[in-house]
Length: 123
Image 1 (cartoon, one colour):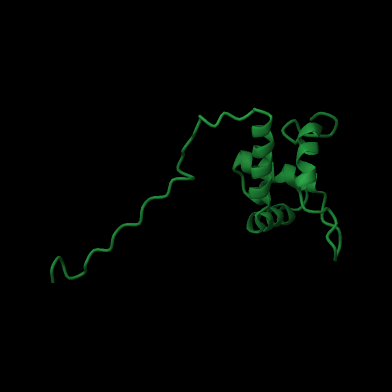
Image 2 (image 1 turned 60 degrees about the horizontal axis):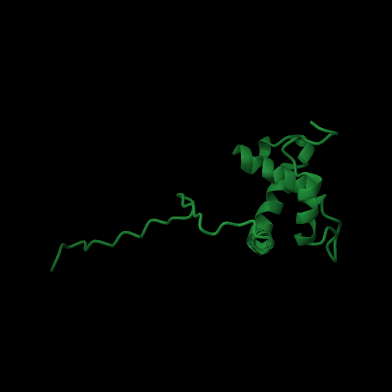
């Protein structure tokens, strides 16, 4: 760890690019949310390692907080908006090569199988 931060956590520069794209830290009502940076580092740790939410290091906070924030933001479209904005910025700076495309099984869906007639063809 460097200065109390895991080397895989967001750097200060990465955090400064990401921070303005996140929902407000303190919601209009209720109690303030746990620190976004800590929770996002926990989310990234789980996604990077493939471990269950419950197995994340305790420094990222409650596994329930980490997982619920991930799923709530996914449902609300927060991650999609963040990705679109970061791509837009990188494209404007000429840092994206749109001629490269990668396809894997997470984006390719199998076509649904046609139902076969239970009584056979022509019956």
